[in-house]
Amino acid sequence: MVYSLTYRRPPHVSSSRASLSGSEKPTSIGESFRSGSTACQASIPDALSFDRVISGGTCPPCTTRDFMNYLIYIEHAAENLQFFLWYQDYVKRFCALPTSERELSPEWTVEKAEADHNIASNNAGIKKMSPETAAIFKGTEFAPVQTAVKEFKPDSNPFHTPPRTPDPAYGNVRASETHWDDYSSTLKSSQKSDHVHKAAGAFEAAGVNYQPFTIQPFREEITRIVASYISEDGSRQLNLASKERTALLRALATTTHPSAFRNVLHTVEWTLRHQAHPNFIRWTICNGNRPRVIFARGLGIGLIVAGLVTAILITMSGVGRGWRALSAILFILGISTLIAAWKGMCVVLHGLHHRHLRSWELFAEEDDASSEYELKKSSLDSMESNNSYEDEPWVAKYKKRNIIRKIFDREVWIQEPALRQIQDTIFLQAGLGALVGTAILVVIFVVVPKGNLY
Picture (cartoon, rainbow, N blue to C red):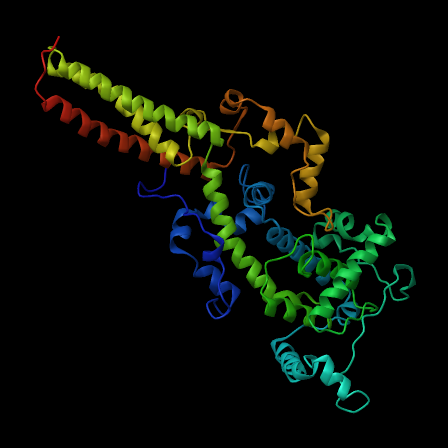
């Protein structure tokens, strides 16, 4: 079974095309996802949709881990997906809390956001008062209010409440226990103080009075999220507009309710759905690595040139016209190979429904450290680490491989049926294109009079 013969791969979406201003974004998340790019929607089957990939309804190489690896090693922008997965888990754990604890963090509504924005606008003139003017009004009722950030001491918080363990009925208990609940016993106090200071600096830069001591649930986890994803010097800083960052920090200074992330989640999910996911599917369709694809393109061009030379030699000879049709064999092979390779596919690998192992997958079994590091990146074990991979063991090993070995690297069977159907469609398109091109070339050479030169 194949898709329509007019099928086209998802077009590459640049970051500038995916980012929209506030006025250009739809009014709701659901509306924005239903009104996405028509070209991308037509090119991505439902079996490979963003929701299916995130929910675990796909097979390799289209799983959530493959998506994460693509964003880390190819796009170099994994922080959006990491934040999105954390937020999904956070919502489950927050909803699993007892009602008495959830009430400590009230929902952040639009009315509260507008009221907070109005207060901030009214105080903007005072906060921007120059030092000279402030010195003049010092000691009067017009003096600017000085807000100080309290020094945080990790061992002196009498209201410290670590994140609660979710009820088993909500699922993903082990992941939550491992990722969030045990960090206080495994991280050094200096590390805790570091991200608390980062978060305090982010709140201060936004003009928010930061209060680190609170009985709200998951407050310390939110502090870590601010230090890693929201702070301007965070290890996994999200690409947010200044207004979005300030609005989020004002909301988080009041509550730890998941609704505080509503606007930021809209931006992150929009980017994932309309840029990262289409680019991931486009990249996954390619079944060969770059050296193999370049080799296939060269092979296709070589076969076409060989077909032209063969047709010319036969035409210049004294043999019958029918012999010129022999060049059609080389034309068909060359044109089909070239068309498929131009779309990132190797026809030899496709014949077996195989794909090359990615460079970071080649040494996963040989190097336990590399395998564990990959798992760590995919499952968000640490928020302190950035997404840099230059020091991973496989990078140096792969650079040492010669070009011939890269072209004929290890292969693995493609398990995802929808991906195989897309590749079958591209292969059929390449074959039909080769037939049409071959027919035109052969007809041209057949109608040319023979040369009788030998």
